[in-house]
Image 1 (tube, rainbow, N blue to C red):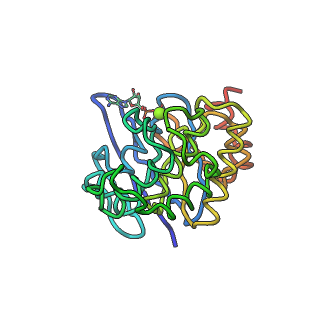
Image 2: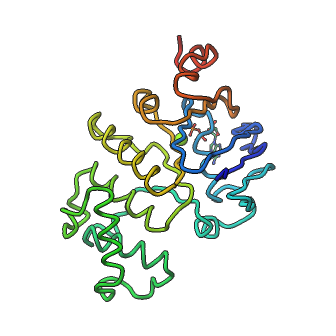
Length: 245
Ligand code: ADP
Ligand code: MG
């Protein structure tokens, strides 16, 4: 089944048309890259997909259910997840407590606040940490983690909500090349193991062409190409407009 059906999305900011009728689908259990130069409209697109930004027109259906017009929290409940930077607020909590918090929130038990939550969802949290390779750091304070580890924790926290589609805006930004490969390999494994669909933006073309199942290219608010990494790499419009050759 198709996870996401996006039809003719349009969004203008004053005179700037950030989305000029974007149409695409995301398959179930697919790792799909959205690329394009700065200002192409990638973040605008993501913001519409998770309900943060209301499109001027168009439709976004998650497993047949319309998202447009719903509040971000509702869209999140429906299963559109997004990775986000962990805020300093939780920096003094441990790694596993942060994941427990996310699970408490998912199960609507946020009133059972850490540190009073104790062992609530601890096993589930532990499983998620194992999934992202962070179990050995479960007891560490988040504020002391290396950047790459924070990114993996961020992924575990996003997965705590059991998203059906996960949006990752530049997940590997600021990471060393080796860490980038690791994070994307991990993401690809999770996509396959859990049947989650991931839509991600990325500047590093090596990452895109190595890991994505499919690639879409956005330029000035329009999708100018989509296909397999191979097809997109060989597309002459992409080469001239995006890769600058
Ligand atoms: P990308 O993520 O691909 O770099 P964005 O979606 O951030 O692109 O931006 C697309 C276009 O929309 C740019 O011209 C940007 O300046 C404009 N834009 C994005 N958000 C806003 C906003 N909140 N207000 C005004 N213009 C915006
Ligand atoms: Mg952006």
